[in-house]
Each structure stands twice: as structure tokens, then as C-alpha cells.
Image 1 (tube, rainbow, N blue to C red):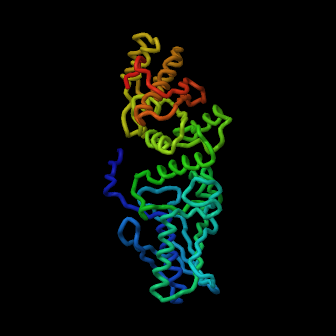
Image 2 (image 1 turned 60 degrees about the horizontal axis):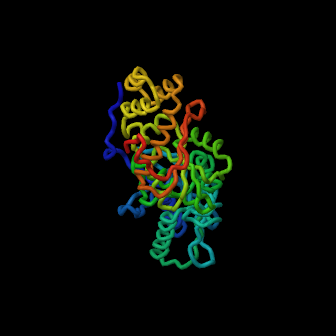
Image 3 (image 1 turned 90 degrees about the vertical axis):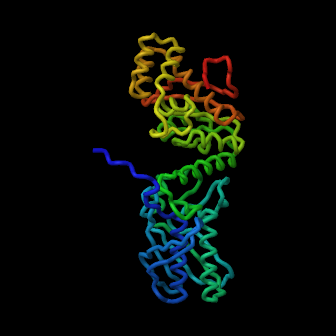
Length: 376
């Protein structure tokens, strides 16, 4: 029996790596100043409420304290769910608060991110949270010494392999992220933020032609198709087609190529710009119309209408040799995308099969031909 889907409003929110790093920093500094182990730490989150974190360990060294908590992503577990987040704090002679990343926290190597090249990948909001929390503790205890804070994630380098960090030029571990302090179940906010960052990095390194793909497999095909483009030009947009296109336009990218497969691109061709499996059903009437324009017989058109999946339609059309169908589908993707973003860039679309066959293409389309068959 299928489990009933849970209402996202009833699902348990979690906490960002930035919130966790702030909490362990507060615990470590408090322990250092009071010489007492801390079992919890309460901080104020950017979202406007307080949160209390359990401190798993509090280790005293000669002149420093290291505290640890375990990240809980709530009911939307991500690559950093259950990550051990540590902060080592020590008092130093140099005035000010000196924040850096240790083991498992990535370091920025490419421009275009909100953190300067060479710095630890601790994003602006978490950085501000940590610095302001440290200052609050110093003020509370009337301490004027300089403070050194080092954030570490022991398994961060391995976790980073499941993120886009490598493509973004963040090397050696994960990023310390979060603008709210909380993780909203199924919000996809972290992934969408990584898309925007990827576009920024691509632009910063000089890319004026981006290739956006629906996943790792289609990205592999795209890289083979566009071998002259640098790695930063390839961006996995996942299901967020419209979102990615709008941000490409917003950042002034003049040329974009979409690369994907039948299932998701059948939706894009119909004007559906969020192509998650639950976002909208495949319109088989639309695909039947395409087949008819491609010269398919009425019998084939009827088979398309009766199909169960877009992939099944693709296999049928390919078997019968109506290859014009795939080019029309690609052109439709370009037209629908131009409609969605209201123009402003040149688009291409390439459609692949699961077996890496290039099924169809539409190249360098910048305007919609009103005399074409497209219904957009």
C-alpha cells in the first residue's frame, strides 16, 4: 500500500550548516571564557526566532576549546544531513575576530561567488551570524581579546562530492551555507541557490555560452557535443528550467543551449518550466500533433495518443523513422523558453535518448516564427 503523502506544513524543519557553525562557535567561546563544558547553545536565527542546539562534545585544549554538533536537516535530508560541525575557538593577541575554515570546509578558487577567492567557503549570512554571535559573547563577558574561530567538518570533503562545489571552484569540502538558518522541507532553495552561483561563476570566468542540462547523464552528452566550452559553462539545472533561464537572462548570458531527454523536454516544449514528475502530466495530444506535423500516419498518431510515457512515444517515432518529430520538439522547446523569458537571448536545444543517441536539434533560435506550426 502506498504511504499517504505528508503535508509539507506538517514536516519537520532542520537547520543549515551556517546555524550549526554559529551554535558550536558560541558554545566553544562560552566554554573557553567560563572553563565550563557546554551541553547546549541557543542562537538567534536570521528567520527571526531562537534555536537551541545540542552540543555533542566540548573538548578543552591548552588554549582552545572545540565544540561539536550534528546537523539535522529535518524531513528534507540533503548531502550534509548528519554532518559533524565543529568549531575551535581560541583567544589571540591580534585584535578582532578572525574566522577561517578547517578540515572539510571548502576553499574558493574561482571568482563569481559571494566569497572572495582564497577564503573559506563560509557564505555571507553564516559569516555575519558567527561574527555577531562571537561579539555578543565577548560583550557579555566584557572581554576585549582577539578571537580566532576555525570551522571544521570532518567528513566534508567526501560530502562535497555529492554537491556542485567542485564545478563552482570550491575545493576541499562543503560550503557553510544558509540565509534563513532553517532548512524548509522540499523547498529546493539550496539547489536553486547553487544554480545562481554556478551562473555567476561561469560569467565571472568569461563564459558567454552556457549549456544547461537536466542531470548528470545529459551533462555528459552535452560535454561531448560542446567540447570547446570550458567546464564552468555546463550547469545542471535539474527540474528548474524556467528559473535557470530567467537567471541566465538576468546575468546577461547571450547564448544558452538546453540538453536533455524526452520525458522532461516534452514538458518544456509544452511550456512547462518546472519539470518535476509531479509538476504537470505529459500532454500526449501535443505530442500527437507534433507527430502529425512530422508526417506520421493517423495510425501512429493514435498510438502516440494512447502511449503511457514520453519515452515510449520517442521509441515509437524513432522506430518508424519520423526523425523530423524530434527536431520539431527541440524547436518547440526553444519557442516555449523564449516565450517564458520574453526573449533576450539565443537558444538551442538538443534531445538525446537514454542510449546517448542524438535524436534532434534546434540551433540558434532568437525569435518565434509566427508562421511556424508552433502554438505557443
